[in-house]
Length: 436
Image 1 (cartoon, one colour):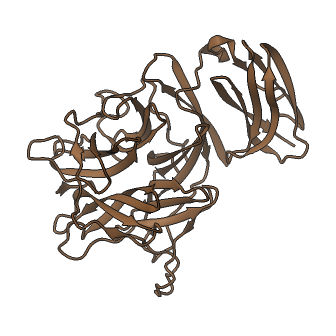
Image 2: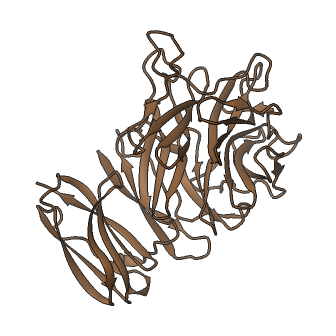
Image 3: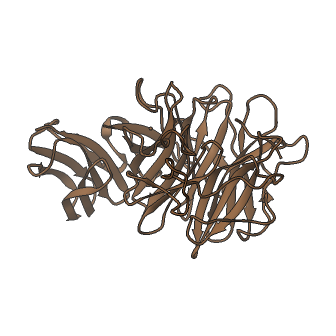
């Protein structure tokens, strides 16, 4: 093992490009202006800083495993909506006055491979068992890093794998011979994939690797084509691409990753058909830092993305400001990433058009116009900035033509809302402002 290198609402539009086409693909990401998870109060294990690693939805609630505190441990927070989080408190821990927050995974005993820190977990649920892969480091080399595995039946009490680490550095002279870090694991219906980032001790360059395993408890085989994702000289993500987050939609792997200079990361996007050969859009990054003075005006990165039934993407990410304050933020987007095609001036392929509502701002009535080039089932709906649908304006089959729909928002509070048109393979979202 070797070296481990030592968050009001705003609607942002970013560009994604499909791996199979030069056509522009867009997602409208909506950022929560404030962080949704912040460091604990003075004296708590996570008081100095924290960063996101992994979010999982178990069918009824969200679970977030996060790091790093001081010492470097892994914590757990739960939420019913993905916005308001409760940090885990072990009822058996009595350490007043700081007994409100407790980590769920701690460094190993003295002399073990992870006795200095455990951090940056990825958690998946397999049947009824939670599996965690995490970064570990040891003394006397606290900057060392390899990847370990642990299991749990409740996501709180974890048992580390006896043969840890399960992924270690490569042989001398290889691209990953200094440290391997920040795993992301998923199952694609046939095999388990792990993506991780690594360093070879030369300069500040970090790249992303890939490994596979037939079973979560089996040995991992590194991809012979590693590294599978690298920085590009002169581009926004030089000299580091790291912290991969990957989802699989049944056909395509979608990766969000952190790129750029240390401490000034942005979030990029890439796609792959096999998890090994990746294509990055020219329009990256897909998530930028906030404007000056915002809590995330210096860095956004280290994200976790969930695909909600193929229609909405939810992202939690680590953000930092110029003062060095680090917390976790939230953004959502209607998807899927490769399904929204836009050309100039709001005119879409096949003649689909969604126009800006008028008037805007409005009180309390506004009109929404759209155009259909063919018959199909149409949904026109209104969402709040938590991603919750608050009104369905159209939900029926309509022939080709131009349409105008009224929304009477008399019963709604002032604020920013989103309206979303879905017809055939066309999905697009715009914002409107109710000002009473």
